[in-house]
Image (cartoon, rainbow, N blue to C red; front, side, top):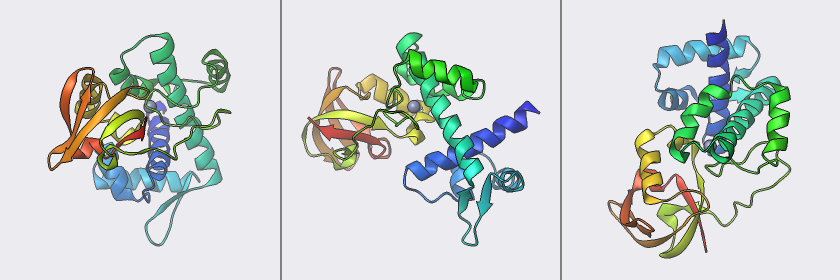
Length: 219
Ligand SMILES: [Zn+2]
C-alpha cells in the first residue's frame, strides 16, 4: 500500500520539522500542520507507534525512536536535495519547488540520493535556507534573527521556515517582494501591521505571521 507508506513518511518528516523549529511535537501540532482532523492524526500516530517509529509519552509528546528518526532524516534530506535539483538544475520557480519536492521525496532511492549529493556539490541547505541533514558543509545560523526582530537597515535573507513553505500565499508574497535566501533588502520599520521592507521591487509590508518565520542576518 503505497499510500500508507507515504503517510508514514509524511508524518515522520513533519515531526522532525516541528522539532527543528524548537516546538514540542504533539498531535495538535500535526493537526495544524497537515490540515487533517484530530481523529485522522490520532489514528496515524497510533500506527507510527505500532510500527516502532515513535513513542507517545505521558505528557502527550511524540518522540521518534532511532529507526523513526533515521527514516525521518532521510526523507527530509531527500526533500531538500530534490528542491535544490529543481531550482539549480531544472530551473523551476523558487515558490513552486516545495510542493513538487513533496512528491519527489518518496521516490528517491538511496542510490539516486548519493548521485544527487555528488551532482549538486553536497549543498549545505535547501533553496529556502534549511540545512540538509548529513551535508559535510555547515551553515552558520548564529547571526540570524526573525524579520520581526531585525533592526532597521540592510539585511540578507538566510532562511524561510518549512512552515511558510506550505503556505502558498506567504511563499508567493516572499517571492514577489524578493525576500529569498541570499537576497538583500532593507528593513524600514516594524509597525502593527508588519515589517516594512524595501527591496528591488519597492517598499512592501510583510505581515507579522510571515515575518516571524522569515530569518535574516545583518549585512
Ligand atoms: Zn526547502
